[in-house]
Length: 225
Image (cartoon, rainbow, N blue to C red; front, side):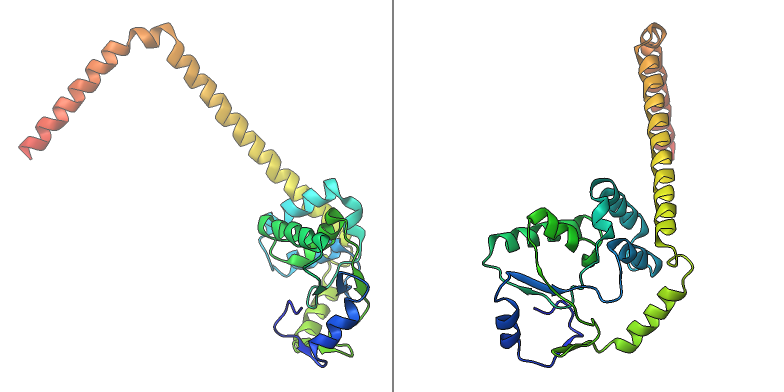
């Protein structure tokens, strides 16, 4: 039920489960201070919560395959009500785990897509993530400080411009990798051309003789030592 051990419940969990799993197999809160999944990506990157290259790769994948999902309001995964007996819930959790293992460990980046791919529509709680009638989040002071830093960040004042910058950096990295692969393939072709040439085959006995002489000289030197 709780995905964050710093969250405190004000109400017994049995009553909450009975109330929120009555009509839906999965119930969780929306994020109360992020407007889009894209904004969540930019926040994770700006605060250095995960490896930048991994975040670029995940964002690029989602931008190409599911661009409209990036505009959805993200979910807050601190509190989750779920019925594991439901096959769609189990499928959703398997997809979610696969994306967390493949990409960023920040699970709020991939949960929207996991719901979509599993064909599961959750019941949405519209509560303040810091505090509601049934919970409180003790790290509130620290969270407010992080939120102030987010709002004062010049990069996050225009998230789509920041996303464009991230995409440009990723494209630059992919182009550099492609150039390195081309250079390596070119060197392999040159090597294969040399090895298959007539002169290389004809001089093979001479090279073996030179290698033998070199090996003989090294062995005699070792014996003298």
